[in-house]
Length: 560
Length: 48
Image (cartoon, rainbow over all chains, first blue to last red; front, side, top):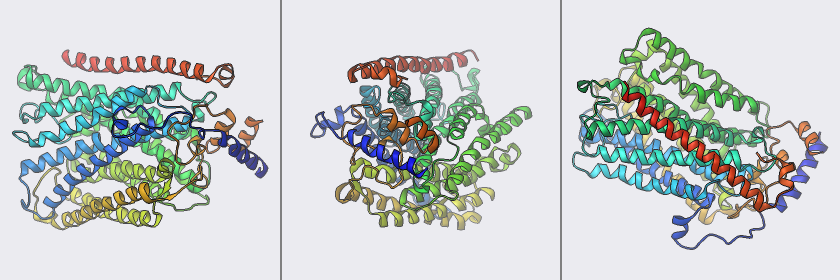
């Protein structure tokens, strides 16, 4: 068996030398116009990632305002109306401006490299998808400076708060959501077309790395969910400006209808933000456990099952709207069923690590933190999915704690893990690993100080989205705020680590970067040349690089 | 998917052209599906 492995490794070394290295094209254009006109997937990936990081800092600054106001009971710093604008825009910016674009950035960088494609399938549309974002984001933020202030109805923008009683700026908000949705749909079309049509000849779907699989399924989710959101905001627009009454009870409409439409989009949206995270972690853990991923095909089927189920559980967000008991029972059981494929995934990650030769480089630390903390978020999600229990938890800080464990220690942690994993390949430099580990421990401790006490606040009955609270909630709020400030400050260190890496990091020449990294992206030179895979990678290389998927013996047969 | 065997008889440019042709078809179908879902959302709610 050892001979087989060595043969394959030698073959990879030979083949890798012939790929990607010869950069026959011109390099990138000089100056600022390079970024405006670019159709290169790596450039666009970089743009997405920097945009997402900027929005993360903006949304994070809003979170700091929220935690500062909640540091003590009583109104301290801001007016309640402004506080509501902060909670609303914090949610919208983090979801649509930070997490989603960050994953699209990772997809842009990695998918063509992982499937041996020259670029994304539709490079000009790719450019357009990105450049819509800064305009949409600016439009959303500009609402803060308008008469009556920005949207203050929560990120879920329930009618009639967002229709009858909303400020004038809501029309700008609607336009921004339309643009963000349009960008996401175009991005998803590009991902689907790239994966379905641009794979290197001979690469079967079941040869694809998990990150590519999870993104393919996410793209289908986007295609099915985002038009529903577009429909919801279009109906809001006509209700506000053209005399319709979709959501106005006085005109024969139904405000609860809005909630159904919103959550038919909103629940799949949760999985849009977490499935690519599953993909990232499924790439990182095998590398640092020095073992193939346990249960590759079960991971693929579990991801698809989660995606399908995500369209059948939306009303668990609405148990308190007065739905029939039979409806509550159905949505409760359907919700709990999602824990089965999710459990398969967590089991597979743990089993991949089991008896592996583990090492704890920075990406692995983030991936392990993801597995543990995302599971905590999953468990609290199960609690919320139980209809009778949800009567107690609904609209409390328990919900806030739950979705922050899923989206911060889940989605965001995986993005940070991905950046630390692939950054040396992107820029050809290694970051300061000691500082990165300090940053990890700083962030992971502070994030738990921030969000864990919120479970207790919620169980004790503290409602979400309030600027003031009763005295009995004071202690845990203070602890949570201290954690929040520390977690916020950790991003300054993260910024330094990344900028320092790009400017002064130690050069990395090894294409593989990490000892056991597998996949086509590790066969090209480091840093990744501007143009890659002009010549598609040969089947032997594809098979050898998917040894984290297939068993070594199977590979030996295939390469003969 | 283009098989290894098919690819062997194509030049790099032919391969890329064929991949892009397929990608355009896929993109058109997916875009139409997305537009259909948007219209269906509006239509179903108009008939409430």
